[in-house]
Image 1 (tube, rainbow, N blue to C red):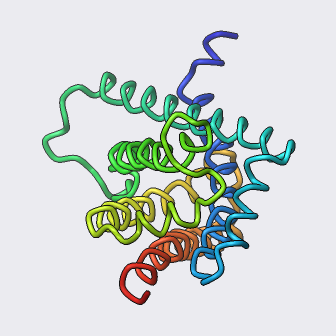
Image 2: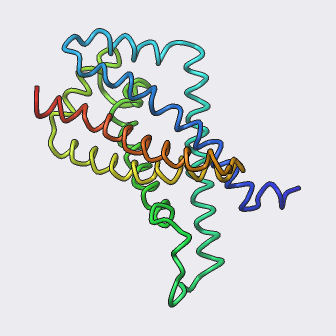
Amino acid sequence: MNKVLYSSISKKFVMALAGLFLLTFLPVHLAINLMLLNDDPEPFNKAAHFMSTFPFIKVVEVVLFVAIMIHVIWGILLQVQNWIARPVAYKAPNRSDTSPFSRFMIWTGGSIFIFLILHFFNFYFIKLGIVEGDPENFYSVAHNLFKIPAYNIIYWVCFILLGFHLHHAFYSAFQTLGLNHRIWTPVVKVMAAVYAIAIPIGFAYIPFVIWILK
């Protein structure tokens, strides 16, 4: 039983489920963030307040954190297993069956995780009272951050990396769950590409408007 639980296949399966849950969260987060483009701060602040106080959302928040940690920890363990299994790289590696996105998943994922920690300090830790700030006015917090050039550059770089990460994650999650089909697999590939482009562009567009156009 323990061998099954801790096998690479079971880790990939758990990672896929956690990853798919995170994929459903990003469009919701983006929809709320788009309210930052409104000149009136009230809609965004009300949405942020609702997300931080509604009981069901608080439960989902816990599940989200668990999913992130599972996804990160299992991803690291799988990568370490791969490195141990093949300590010396092949002289002429056959990369024909491996996408460039999959080869760099550990690095794009690590960069995104570092950005998440920064994001928590700027927003979530304010809500917890760990970091100074007004949890009832995240609109101003976000606008002040997006007017800092260095922050925007870091933000855009991270979302470019997120796009690469999402492209492979979307498709590979369905593969891992065994959802391969002659007709639907190409559709999933197209959906993965659209998702991996649309979500990062949506997030990147917000600081661009606030910094450059406002």
